[in-house]
Image 1 (cartoon, rainbow, N blue to C red):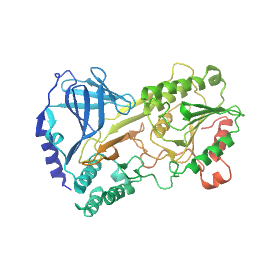
Image 2 (cartoon, rainbow, N blue to C red):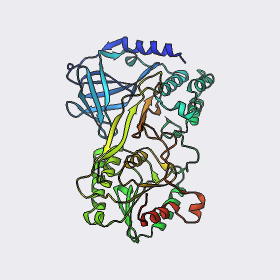
Image 3 (spheres, helix red, strand yellow):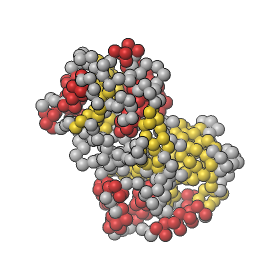
Image 4 (tube, rainbow, N blue to C red):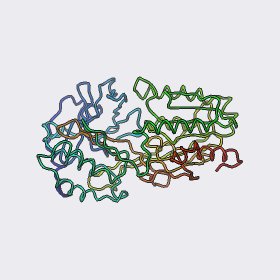
Amino acid sequence: MRTAAALGMAALAVVSAAVPVSGVDGVDGVDGVWRGEGYGTVISIGNGALTGYDITAVSCLPGALRGERTGPRTFRTADGLVATVRPHGRNRARLTFDGMLGARTLTRLPALPSPCTTPPPDGPLPVFDTFWHTYAENYPFFTAKGVNWRAEGERARSRITEDTTPDELYGVLCGLLRPLHDAHTGLLASGHEPCVNTRPGTPDYAGDPALRGRIAEVTDANLGAMELRRFADGKLVYADLPDGMGYLRVTGFTGYTDAGTFAADRAELDRALDAIFTPTRVRGLPGLILDLRVNGGGADPLGLRLAARLTDTPHFAYAKRARDDAHDPASFTTPEPFFVHPYRGPRYGGPLAVLIGSLDVSAGETFVQALTNRSPRPVLIGQNTQGVYSDTMYRALPGRDWRAVVPNEEYLTSEGNTYDGTGIPPDVRVPVFTEAELSAGRDSALAEARRLLATESPQ
């Protein structure tokens, strides 16, 4: 490991010892080399492609961000997103993705940094150092989590030698992440199960098919609905309940079609919402229960798209910012605000009860956050959400097919606070999918939502 002063000297050397790149199309074009603000990346554009490099003080590696050119300023990435680079002043540009919120600021570099053009060192120690620096320079929440990353890293590095096996190295790196209890951190290593860490007490929904089945069975039995209508490959479920209320369950904001693109998911979501929020239904619903207790996340823009069907007035959703200083976890880019704008067609603006819990994760949580300034304000029922909001970066490690998964953003309330770590708390706290609830076939959160919506003022 290096001291802070050494880190700064290393970063300066990476940029100054550069290799010229051909294909630059002038200060008003987008071809050339760019440094991304706040994301530890360098991007090279030319010869029909966009290539991202993951930069730390000790490494520069080709990263997961790659795209084929589909227009003068657009690129199709391997995961089905459309990346767009637009000039934004002299030697500046803005990078956006159709499945993500916000724009990344880019600054033109004269050339590709020379470390990006040479083979990276291999072996357990370079892998460890790159992994440690990736978190040290990007992760914002060490203080909030009570983790001294430098001290933990020094202890862990003392266990690494050139003879350390891949299994041993994986165990050391995964062990570094466990105290963070952050479901958006991880290690993807070939030949190993993904290293994923959740908040203590979170049910093992992903790894326990029996639990998934019990949750679905108990929830559906307590609805008492004559018909459950399923949309978007089952990710959306709607029912008109016997008491006249509506029930909408959303288990994710991705994976709606086999196409695997954000554009296809968006179109499928719109079709589902058109079928659910019909003019007749939105006029007649006395209340709507929105069930997000199992929501694996996905694309934030789809959450805002659904929120637009649930309001009659514009309101603030959240602001987003990214860590932008390798040495200071408290330094961030300027927050970029986002708003919910009412859908122009049929929409529901009446009483709303939202069921939440620790299996409500990522984009499922940003969606809840986007509803909290709605009028009338929804009542939140259940348990705290998981407490992970940032888009995740998949960062390369040298010499092998391993990736570090790291968040670097905060989603802020209108007061400038974040729910990272704690999750969004409910207004009414009741058990969610506990063993006692499931064994008794009981769904207290759903029952409480029905009771509150039946009153005159559910808030």
